[in-house]
Amino acid sequence: MSTQVASERTQSPAHLVDAESTYCKGWWIHALDRVDSTSTIAATLPAWQAVRANTQSAGRGRTGRQWISDQGGLWLSAVLPCEIDQPGWQYLPLAVGWSLANALSELGVRGLRLRWPNDLMVGRRKLAGVLVERFNRHTAVVGVGINVSNTPEVLDPRLFGTTTRLEELIPEVGSWDELTVFFLSSLRRAHEQLEREGFSAIAHELNTRWTEPRQVELTFSSGTSAVRGRFAGIDPRGALRLATDHGPEIYDATQVALLRELD
Ligand code: BTN
Image (cartoon, rainbow, N blue to C red; front, top):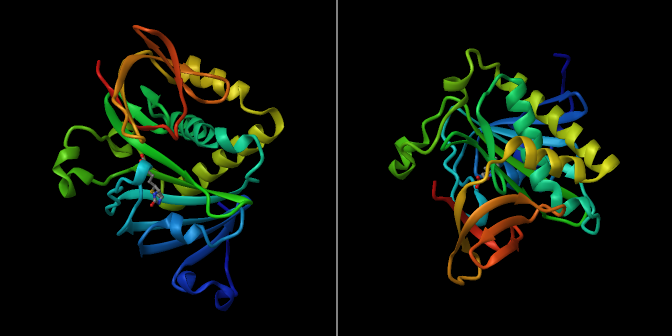
């Protein structure tokens, strides 16, 4: 892998002075030991920069949940150019999930599926999660958490039996640098495809290749009562299609706090 080590450390923002910074395949990558959240640091950086840390003390999950980020996981946040009024923005989280699914499958992970909107699952166990956040009008911060050899259930016993890790799924996991560059390259390709062709081909693939119809229960951010139905894929805008006893319904990711699979 060809990398260029940052020579001008003094020009780095204060929170990056301890970072090992390299340039590879179009990305500046800042590797740190312990941070609060890689996404909080990435929020201060321009597009095509990324932050990876060995551990996070305040990792964030979707809808304000805590994300346990123990040693042995890949905790990575990447800054993508993304104008707030650009249509691709609303599909970005799903496009990122799609890119991650492709990359993990290329690494040899079998039995992968996407649990809408952003969970990468192997069977019933979660391998990775994605959180896309905005901190300004011109970029989006894509946070990716992948279980590699870590054991989050040790810190939170409620996770027991619900997670899996890369080292259980493929014979050989590469170095942190290799994994990071691999996922960032896949992310860049997804971004290019979104810019070039829009979301329709990705939506089609998500529906045909990565999702399965299942009975689900949705809990809403607004606090309104939960709804049950059969997950019927996504619509062309990335919203969830639910087949209920009362007919088809559509929900977008901002409405849904939790999707629980019932079968
Ligand atoms: C989820 O499944 O709820 C999304 C989890 C996203 C976790 C990643 S780890 C790197 C980045 N930094 C964070 O604080 N969160 C994301």
